[in-house]
Each structure stands twice: as C-alpha cells, then as structure tokens.
Length: 347
View 1 (tube, rainbow, N blue to C red):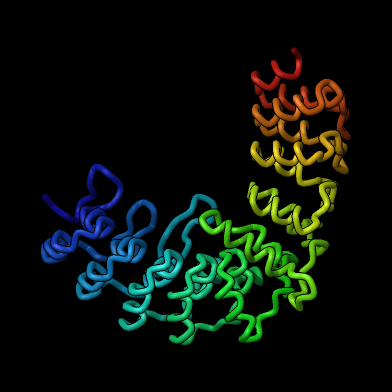
View 2 (cartoon, helix red, strand yellow; view 1 turned 180 degrees about the vertical axis):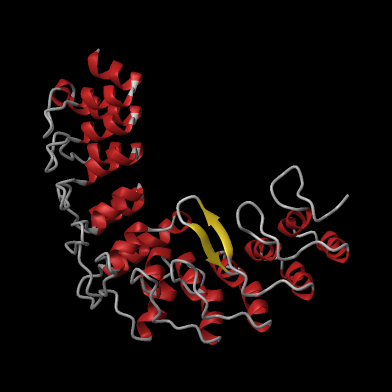
C-alpha cells in the first residue's frame, strides 16, 4: 500500500492516524514517507488534526518529521481557507498542553487567520482560560482586533468566560467599544457560542449589572438597528433571549427594518424560540417596515412548524394580512413551492 495515496475516505492514511491519536501508526507512516504537510479535503494537515484533538505526542512526531508550525489550513463552505495554524486550532479547542508545546516549539503567536484572529482571540472565543493565559505569557496582544474590529474582549464575552473578561478589563479593555458593524460586548454575549451559552448568559448578567461601569445597555444598536435582543433571536439562543427578557428587553423592540425578535426567529426557523415568544405575548400580527408579519417570513423561508405555531396563535387573522407588495403569506409559500405550508394556509 502506498501511504502517499488517498484512502477511500477523504485524506491520506496519516491524517486518519493523527486524528485518532494512534502514535505508533503515525510513527510507522512517517518512516514510510507519508507527507506530513499534505492537506485533506477539509484543508487540514495531520498536524492540524493532532492539534484539534490535543494529541501532543503525535504532534511531536509530526514536528520531527517536518510539519510546519505556521502552516495555515481549514476550510469552510462560505469563506474558503480559514487560515488557522495548529496553534489557533489547539487554542480554540482548549488544549492547554498542546498550546504550550507548540509555543515551546517556536510557533508564531502573532499570526492571524483570515478573520484576523490571533490564537489568543480563539482561546477567548472558546472560553478557555488555560490556553488564554499561556498565550498571554507568550506575548499575544490582548488588545488585538480582527479585520472587522472585533476585539479579544468581544470574543471573550461571546465565549462567556468571566475570568477572561475580567482579566482583559484589568488590562484596559472596554466593553463599550464597538466593532465596525457597530456591535459592543453585549451583542457578542448575546450571540454566544453554542457549547458555552450558559457562560454567555453569565456574561449578559455581568455586563448589565446595575450601577456597574461596563457601559453596556439593552438599547445599544448596531449599524442595522439590532440590539443584543435581536442578535440573540437571530442565533436562536433561547436561554440568552430569556436572560435579556429578564434584564428588561422589550418584546416589541424593532430593528431598522422594523423586525421584532419574533420576526427574526420566524424567519430563521427557531421553533422553540418562536413558541416561547408567543407564550410571552409577543405581537404575532406585528408588521415590519415592508408590512411583513412573522408568518410572511416563515412562509417565505419554508418553516412549516413555525407557520403552524403562528397560525395556532392568531389563526385566520394572519392569513389575510398583506405586505408592501400586496402579498399574503400564501403568495410567498406558493412562490417557494412549499406544499405543506400552502395546505396549512388554505385549509
């Protein structure tokens, strides 16, 4: 078997061995001549995969075989190359021992990915204090911003680790600073990262502490008129929405397009959130500036369960409402070919 050739599955044998942490297999494949710098179909090298899973002994083997510490890889459907180094990936996944091993081996801690994130920002976004501390000690800039003006503190609030947030503030970071999109730290706490949503709620509570000097407010809007409340709704973060509601967010607050949280949740298809907002007496018949109701959005996007839930709440009253183009929800469903929604709207 020629280990340079790809397997039936995407990637070469060395990729599979590195991803599985099989040290002895990695050693034999390296000796046999496998290319440690080869990218798989996801743009990942064996070293990136070892970093992702925290296999520091596998990483040592790969480094000895010539794996480049500053190789950048990773793919997404939307953005092409992510440009993550092994250090970015280890920091994002919270592998402190791997982070320290890579730093010790000479990894460049100042390198940024295509977003402009350093490894420190990846650790902050992931909510990982251990890697964060190690990278700070190695000289990473705690005041760095990505290409969109997102700071390490913004990312820390999104990650929800208050220890990181407090540490950055002690170094002079300001929660009220805005990104180029006009968002502050409260927007990012509301945005959350799914595994850390409980932490994100803690960050929301912290940023909105009465009489605090955080400079964050429920009324602050981004360039599109979205408050943190709207951002949480767009992400489908039920707990964050509940937290903001508890803090005093207005159910009928609308962004620049006239969309409420219910419009946004309906458009995105977040059924549990739609149900919760209806239970909290959100106005199901509210219209955006284009005169669209939440039902218009749900019908247009093909969210059958959301359509059913909205109809249960308001019935025929919603069905006949027309938007700025003189279209009812039925028009949108018909245009999209959504048979199930058409049936709900005509029977």
